[in-house]
Image (cartoon, rainbow, N blue to C red; front, side, top):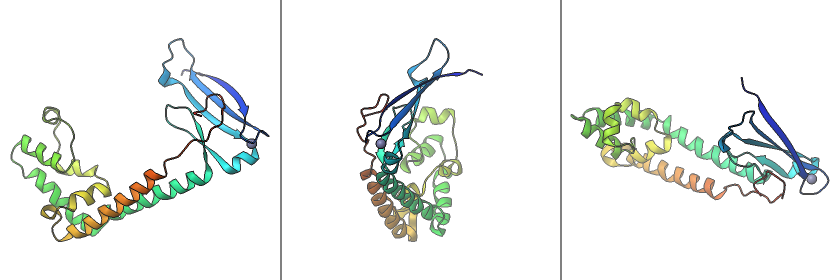
Amino acid sequence: MATDDITEISSPCLCGKGKIVVSQSMPDHAWVRESQISYSAEIDCPDCAVIYIVHHDYHSLPSLVRREDARKRDTAIARRKAAESEVAMSPEAQRLIPRIVSAIDSQSSMAARHRALQRFHLSYESLGTYRKRPYDGTHAVRSASGGHLADIGSHPDIGGEDAAYFAAAAEKIKALAAEERALELQPVRTNARWMRL
Ligand SMILES: [Zn+2]
């Protein structure tokens, strides 16, 4: 098993009484690619740790964000996920799923099945790719989130008597997703080495 080379750099924290410690970790061999270098940061200051939290971005430098902002965003994400799983677990979804499956599987050719999958946004691949690895409606619908099911069910031709339920759910999920995007975390400027700002 390969070992990692770890380098630590300390910079002053925002209030100046403590420090921010960033560790850089990379594989211990000569051919390191940028994507193999990772960073992790810690706030070594009790005062700053009350206000800020480290945000680790995959394959990017860490940043400091306000704890309060991160908490608000986590709450928004949890609300959107709860709304999505409410739809996914609903009796309406249990009625919708077999309709989607049959609308796909009842098609007589592979090209028609592919068109049906694309109509429901359950496939983004080309017909050529689909032909190489075809799958049925049951498989396709398994990956659909609650928000996705709500979008599909909003169409009266597939949602039937539940279309209004799905349309309302889709609106609610869209509004919650918009709230979540508006709470995108803004990094705080630290001027510390190996931090995003
Ligand atoms: Zn501090």
